[in-house]
Amino acid sequence: MKSLDLTPEQKPTYDKLLSMVEVIEKRLRLEIDQTESEQLLHEINHRQQLNADSSKIMEYATIIYDSMQGLAAEQMLLNAEAMEAPAAIRTMLLKGKLAKWSALYERSVEACKTLDKSIEGLRSMLSYNKELISNKVFHEG
Image (tube, rainbow, N blue to C red):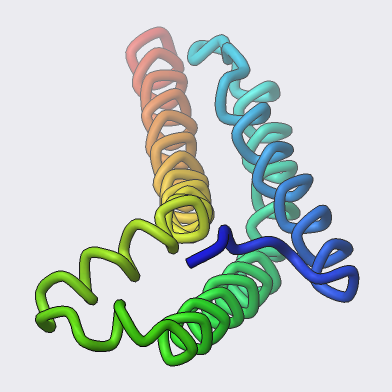
């Protein structure tokens, strides 16, 4: 069976998906001063804007992965030797063919989940900072 390549029609979807995932991954690597509430608020707002694209990311990832699954199955049906192999071997063949696309799908899922968790974490830090300020003002006043 030959390798699974994107069609010219799929390439723009793949490029958009990869770009969107890379933007999220880059944003997640930023260092944030947890003691600066303004910086936390700015980062929460920015990440929420990125989070709005999560459904589009998953749509693109699903389109690509499912298309590749269909292409792999089609190739397998055309390969008599593969079709005669035991089911476990056919499954391994398909998994091997789909490894790149499965990994891209999982990367997309993980980027979206991590972004969502990071927003919640930043909100917790912002809340903690506000509590510290309130306690400080209360005890000083």
